[in-house]
Length: 234
Image (cartoon, rainbow, N blue to C red; front, top):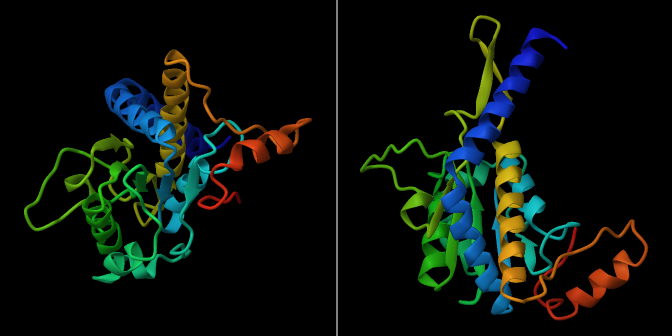
């Protein structure tokens, strides 16, 4: 592997290690919200625009994950041009089937785009619990509203500003992003802890199986039956 590839590998390990060492309390809190949502027969909604949509998909409809999950893809776009349009989050929130028994997860490295902030505010106004996965260096500016301002739980992805970890061509090129890897690691840790909590309470966790294993599809269909009007799988 090249020197830059080796550096990227080290950056990825360092980021995940930082998350593991610093976010245990927040993971515990988020897992508790997920567990309460399961017990209330609610839906865990995942939302991210641009590349952060990958983390929403990691949450929803996958083997080893909870069945009562939904990735919101109505507003997904590869360029994310709509993120900065003021008022768009207020409009989009009105199109969603959200209930107080639900939990909402927003994934955004910056956490300050109008779409995310407005959606976070509307989610809280409608009585849902809100978990956010974002870059959090502890900074706060009075002129910059953030999804952190509305969150019940803030999970720090440990990523640098701008997401990229490698400088190339005398600083003219930045590459080696880590936020998607960090978000997936965080989400799966929250789900794992949620499953543990449910088992500790004597509740059977609604965990999906791989459809590539014998009986997997039939088992998932059985789990999905109570949520089929509100969720779908990719």
